[in-house]
Image (cartoon, rainbow, N blue to C red):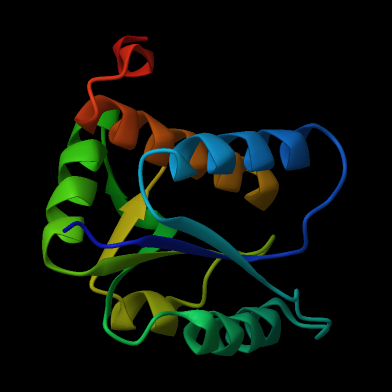
Length: 154
């Protein structure tokens, strides 16, 4: 049986279009697999390095213990949708998967080094709320493709 997918993201659920899209793609994904979204509080530290470190501690705390951990970071390997889908399926064959999404300052580099893999959503800088939406859409696309759902053809 395939492992669950846990997305641990910095920031709270906010009203508005990003929040609506986040909830929509999460709900769609849950039709195909066990997908959870766990939020951690943004740090209030003054320095960006301190914020990233504080948030990294919370992300690790909320990550599943026996899970493949994948950081979403601009310094990671950019993947095409099909490649991401194949990797997600392969990761889920052997364990649960935890995907980490940082806050406005990104992820702490030390956290990325501890992860099993680091992947990028592309070279453009995205607001973290939009990065979460893009990640959830890609998770949904991968799961829909595995299930033979027509969404994956778009």
